[in-house]
Length: 249
Image 1 (cartoon, helix red, strand yellow):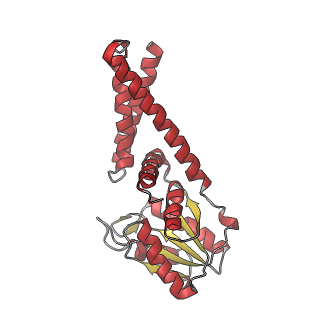
Image 2: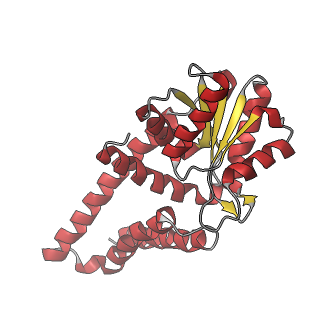
Image 3: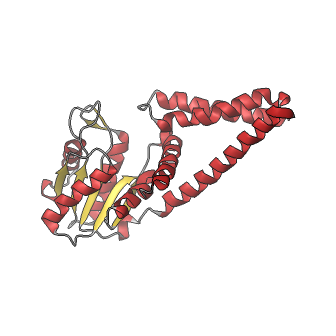
């Protein structure tokens, strides 16, 4: 029992510490607080484990462990789905590339967004005939639309402005695709082949959203920011479950 107590206390404390660390570097969201939500019960069970050997507290303990077991299965399934959706950028052919937006710091692209744009630049350099749509409107705390900042970033990194189309009205992934496709169809017609770039954990859900809209698009993964990878993975797993239960993907 002593070893189990130590494991539970250490694991619970680490998860809570992850939330504290992430909260100092990211905007507060479900991914930031989820480790603490998962860690606090483990910490409490670890502290009170000697008193949970029988009776009602024993039932509570095993019920909590059962929930964690279900959660682990969900995380494994979601992880497999996320990994399976990623395409090989070198062998993905597309007439048009959509880069899904992410938050700005004022008017500057964040690390997450610069990773997406860098992945797009790599793809565009490998496929010089492909045009690109940078997609994202202006959110809270942003001083300009994401699409405008993304276009400037691409130009600064050597992509010709003639290859860039700017979509700067969307507020979510569904609108990213719908409004971007309007621009693509105006320029290339309805038969254009499509690929999209987003952060690796988001490729699966974004692709399912595109499919639900009747858009056949291949996903290209950008690297996540290492210190919030676990937070984003947890949040995205919840997002996949919620969208699936609502019938949106």
